[in-house]
Image (cartoon, rainbow, N blue to C red; front, side, top):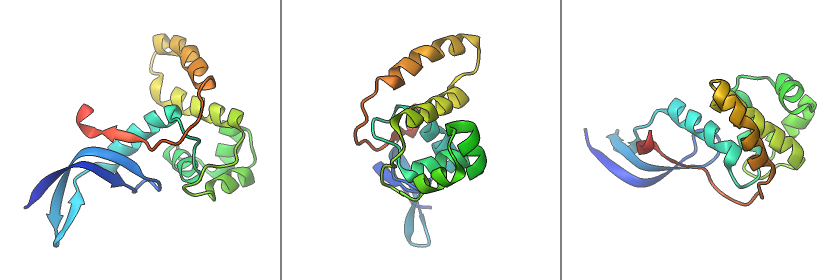
Length: 151
């Protein structure tokens, strides 16, 4: 089986582009394909999304909702305190930034952080520091970057 490594690969399997680094590629039926674990990438991306400098896109909102296995209604009610129609509207923005209120977006980022990063009481005590960091963020354009060799 032929293999090669790519320094940079744009993965779009989550519904939006993610830059992956140092990716093994394998030849299959005459085409090169990345040798990746999609779940591992999804878990890495969900941990990075709260600290992304750009505003969340509609595709990222859908990824977040589906990652946590929530319906539009449950996500709207239990995460962002908005209607399911508002969530559906945000998701329709695709790879463009939503028109979501910045305060709601910060709330969503905090929800993600709490769900994926807090494992014990010490980490819970540090949560407020991360809350302040997120509150002070200035959103700019940035594509998530993941180096799978760091894991």
